[in-house]
Amino acid sequence: MAYVLRLHAKCVALCMALILMRKILENLELVLTGAGLLVIFVVHLIFRGNENSWMLSAVTAVAVGVLHGFIFWLVRRRQRTIRRRALQEAEQMLKDVVNNQLCVITFAVEMHKREEISFKTAHEHITDSVGKVHVVLNDLSEESLELWKSKYKKGLPPMDPGHAL
Image (cartoon, rainbow, N blue to C red; front, side):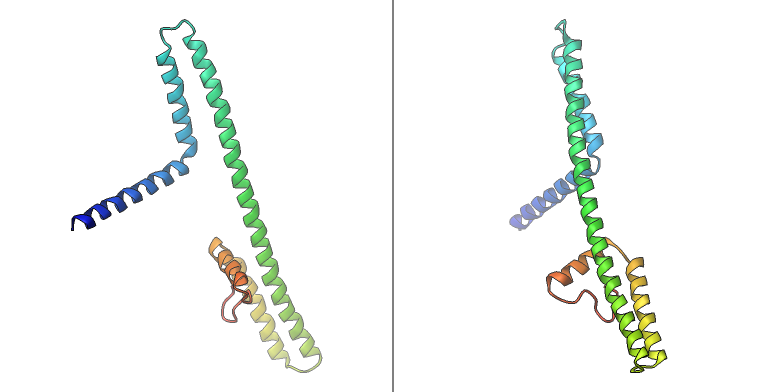
């Protein structure tokens, strides 16, 4: 029983640490700004008896500002890279879905021209394809993109007959 309680306490502590880390990352700018101000004040308090304490505080403030600028630049660059990659993947998925459905539409029109299928059947195929494209465009999300990518990784066709993705 004591082992279970210790294990439970460790799990709770780990969950709390993960939640705290997430909150810190969500508010990174505020955390870094607070930490920078704290460093500047601590440096000033440490050297307050020194005649150059204000100069040291100013140099510390400039160093903190440069460090903040560099960190924010790195974070922003990473966010742009991730956003660009996500948009490229979404564009690739949409092109694939739309091109697949355009092939179905073209095929239905050709079959109707050859009188191999009726106008009603061709119309149903075309309407169904347009509906699938509409669903994909309306339900575009990170989850739908991940589903599409996972189907390609497995070698499955990108669209199930009953689903838009």
